[in-house]
Length: 273
Ligand SMILES: Nc1ncnc2c1ncn2[C@@H]1O[C@H](COP(=O)(O)OP(=O)(O)OP(=O)(O)O)[C@@H](O)[C@H]1O
Ligand SMILES: [Mg+2]
Image 1 (cartoon, rainbow, N blue to C red):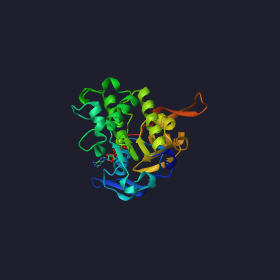
Image 2 (image 1 turned 90 degrees about the horizontal axis):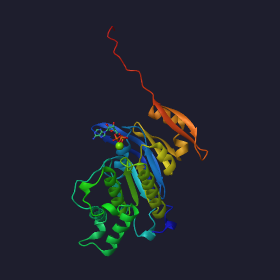
Image 3 (image 1 turned 180 degrees about the vertical axis):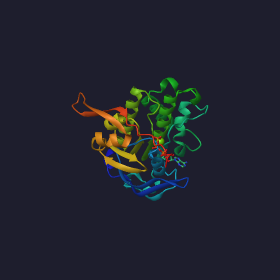
Image 4 (image 1 turned 135 degrees about the vertical axis):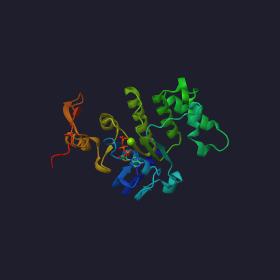
């Protein structure tokens, strides 16, 4: 697919809702996620980020509508055949398959009964792209948590998804790899026009390295837009229950740094009543 047909695809939800264990976890989510952009899904623990992403991936039943639209006819696909790459939160693989084999499995729909030279070349390219050369012949069981996370992300990219859904893809990564991985994800979105959505806890990373932010709180999207519009000092303070200091960085932008948690008073029962 060329960059020229990248602009017009989108994922839209209307009144999206999810129930789990008889409880409403997500309700009334109306979102439009444009192709070619990376949307960060942020919000406190238990807000509903993973539930929302699983619903978008089709991994959980949901109410309302999810519409995938705008795949160019030039790519020969209808919206019904969008390829989805979904990486759940804290996924690990306990397998003796090597890194290269796990990458190739990312192309299982295309592989048939044999591995083509093209598939192998693509897997080797992905190894180089993610700097996995030193571990490409290692079994997955011998990798660190961060190395596993990078391999599993690279595996999803091998699938060349139209919709890439990543649940905390940088949670096990060091500072360098967090930035490098988000750069690669963003480059993938730009190059292919794919819709990319990733849950991220680090608000600095979401602000600097993502194009849009969806702030989830209490099972709904409280705010959506460009990072600096959404992640204001007031909104972050309120939703995360933290005090923030605001600094100006070397680029002249104001940056909010959380400095303390706002603790609610402990509720005590009035026994004298
Ligand atoms: N299988 C389940 N049955 C019932 N409730 C669930 C189930 N899974 C999650 N929940 C509840 O749904 C809510 C949202 O959970 P979810 O995992 O989507 O949060 P999250 O925003 O991804 O949090 P975190 O930042 O901790 O990953 C939580 O209150 C959680 O207890
Ligand atoms: Mg989660």
